[in-house]
Length: 215
Length: 90
Image 1: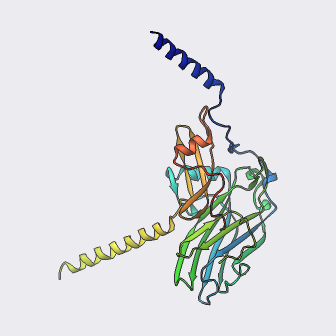
Image 2 (image 1 turned 90 degrees about the vertical axis):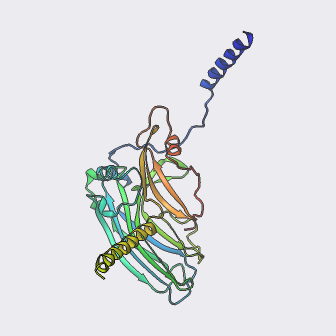
């Protein structure tokens, strides 16, 4: 009887303490504010920087890098509609899946001299952005989309790598030190790297070390 | 000999199908969008980079059920939460 009473008392105390003691530390995450008009997070112009960061056969004459790219803006409501038409879980929709997208820029480059990181970088400056987006569509969670198709031949590995896809991102950037501070995104990045075993790594993040000359 | 034509057509179809599937597999290394819902809320994750065989996403949770955090949603959806992505040289 005493044992049962003690057990109940301990359980009650545990529950009581547990209510006041946070089990998990507070998490920081982004809460979406739907359709909040935020023209201040739209840059007047965008830059686009595509880099083939690493290529084992960069110094080889036979090496080639071919890139087709398209930059789009997707209004927030159209993005939400497109999301609902996707299957649950993972998917790889083409740019055409996003109806109502606004084309900002497109281009195609084929590079045959790949010896230095500068030669392996494609830069497009001053792409008009804000003026192309009607004011009513300048909401915080509109979406910037980079569509790409890449073909890389590595002269050392004697292999060709293909990849096509999209990257999606917000029109704003968040301050890494303060998640609540946002500013207009000014540059879209597209990075590729061929590894020594011939696989392709790819990213839309800004490179930490812009001066790397790794091959 | 009279079965040759249907066999040839079947072989061609199988070849085309195999090429299509292998092409899709080659392209679909990492899903570019991971979106859906769990008992804790909904999530919208966008691929930021792929390296070392891993797919890294930036996620938002448009809806959260009472008391849940975005981390709860993402863990339930099968994501591993990492603070700083690895192999960020790319």
